[in-house]
Figure 1 (cartoon, chains in turn orange, yellow):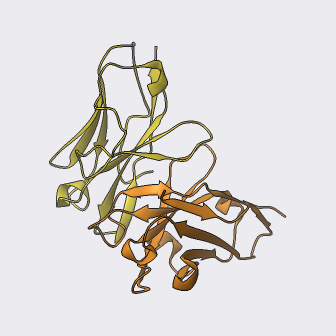
Figure 2: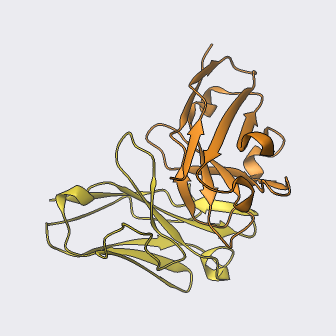
Length: 123
Length: 111
């Protein structure tokens, strides 16, 4: 079955960077985009950006421009999201999610989602 | 403040029909971008409920339906069941932000 498996929880200090991985299985990795979404406790989801695994093209939400970098390793069927200059308010669960067929630039439905990675920013 | 506006909460008795609205603007829903809906239970991963405005993924009961008109979209749930009590989120694309956006979410309470 289609599955996205993410790396484990992280605890980081303010100003540090975090890199979360997302390994895909059960489908052809390069056929559909991977999106990254985060959700703070008690809040709704917040879209961060996308990557086309086939081309490597990326797009980022304006509020994260300059702080977020999404990459992929085709040989490992894995996408990565790195967030730098971490702040307390970056504490959240970070999800990767596969973008829907026929959509691009992050406009598609998101299915499935990874299990989530809790990133805690604490001094 | 979310780009897509949803009511914070809705409620209904078992068996009733409820609707959840998602109001956007001319740069997202009104620009003819598709709307997608998600269901999320506390402590779990969001689950795709409706894609492409009206389409149910395999396994989603036909009690759930989506519609879209102008700058708004709606999720309807008929034959309300206690197990439907969850948070619901809409999602679309915004061309002024050049990215996807979510609604703030609606908490459904089954009375």
